[in-house]
Length: 349
Image 1 (cartoon, rainbow, N blue to C red):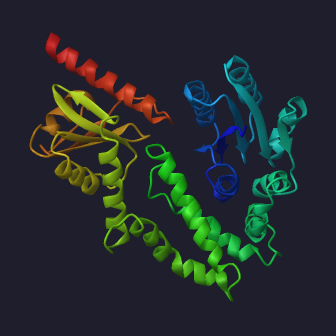
Image 2: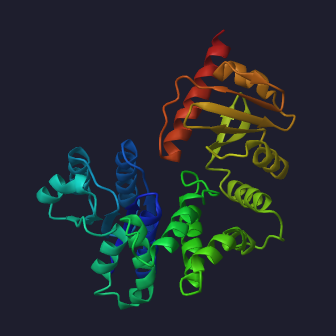
Image 3: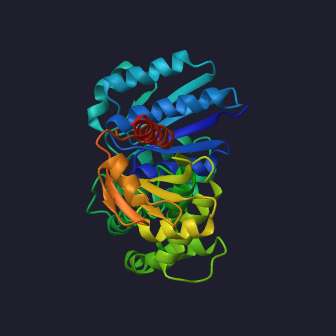
């Protein structure tokens, strides 16, 4: 029986390209992305929490384009050993800083001569010949990731790298599934330009249109990209509003994280969801933005919880005690505790 795959990868072109390939060959797969540092630890722990709750029994935890520290490799091993499920580990990477771990763990595969995408391709193409159609794509990613300036694939790689770097319209902490789907769509459409004359220039010129095509696929009428993105995000928030809801003094709100464009998204969400009284966005810099639609004075709320202020329907502040996280559920739990704590203080007073 085919294992279910949990695939953790980096947040650059090489990292997403690895996942683009595995998405083509595994039916049961979930994607996670991480930068270096504590985010890796949190994502590994989150993956194994999901595995314990998963109805499947056999799993592959695949890590690509990320080198682990000795402590992280030890954590991963401990999580595997503690799991009640059958879990296989596989790490495919090319960063020399992982050499010590590669010598210690048999599941740690290191090759410093090529990109993680090429390593991933060569590892899986033996059993999955359907990946061969992406050979050009692999070479393009390889050329830019290990900086092969003499390669005729290098210039296309530069455009693809920028394509991924500048495509953060869908927040990966809030909506990881849709975020991955968006990245894969962009990489899929980019391949239409690989064999064209001056394809790199044509792709660069088409990026805006390609992005719009993704959002138009969800039934929206043609509009500016900003408006298409805002409407799409509000729809996602509306579908997930129950699990993203928070409360303060009997008022119900929705919590987002680093959402961006708070005024437009917040106001549109509250207009479409009259059962919600306020919209709250918290950032990794501990700042908060609050929006309301006349049902609560968020200037008072901001003052009470964050020494902030502003207007009745638009305010902000800074949560000194907020500790940033990379997992939405952890962020929501912490914010609700802060709201409860401030509410309790006011009631005691």
